[in-house]
Image (cartoon, rainbow, N blue to C red; front, side, top):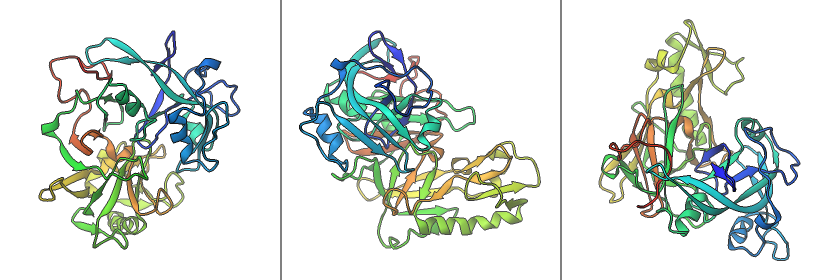
Length: 377
């Protein structure tokens, strides 16, 4: 993202589970990783006062609450892995790439982060902060939509292969509506996550128990900011039991591998998940559609839940989520979102997906795709 005048580049983690966009900031910095670029330097005129409506929203969910007499808007965010970011709200211009390749700019509010803690600092060695794409009023798409720059729609497509890559967009110009499966967004005033309800989750033909919710609906959150996928405690337990079958297919569980809770070593060298995917079954989340008549399915192939580590072992990228979020929600992290175009339509309150190689947008084939933000003509 290009910020300031003159514009300077910053690399940000694309996070649909975060409300606030923030950059590591020389305010001065108490605890910052080296980052990909020099720290952002705010000026006094760019600091947001406490009376700003976005400050009220950001501070509403903090333990300290809203501070009406403060001269600046302080914030503190704690993430699911106990990492945290502390700073003040600032305001500056960001420069956006339009679908036709031109540039435009808009003033937005974001966090000037001067104190980070936890394993978050590890990812900040290659990035400069987080791009908040949730449904909150302070998120980047919500701010741009409130100014009439875009319709409040977010899309991302993460390539499935090891090389990585992909694209993201803001606005609805790249949404191939007719090619996508759509489910209604679960609209709760207490959360800004992109979540919906599903009927069941299966490993191959075996249904996994949700633990106390088998007669009802489960909840799932789509979270590109989470590296791994999290199942409820019972679903995770059922999955782990089902995966014991692979031990008879040349794979042996390696308890000495600390990479992830479950890792296997093979009698033959493993170069990628493709070498051993035939031993594993796909996972399927089954949804009801908007009209409750047609069933929608989200398929996660083995490459969407397995990784090969630097020891040549294959590890399960699905974790026990009993202590994450509320403990009863499935969280689909980016490992399971790869190879799919995901669209979060906050206008129509829907979440959609379509299988994709993530090389270029599906809906615009006549124009070269440059990336960034789609604006109305």
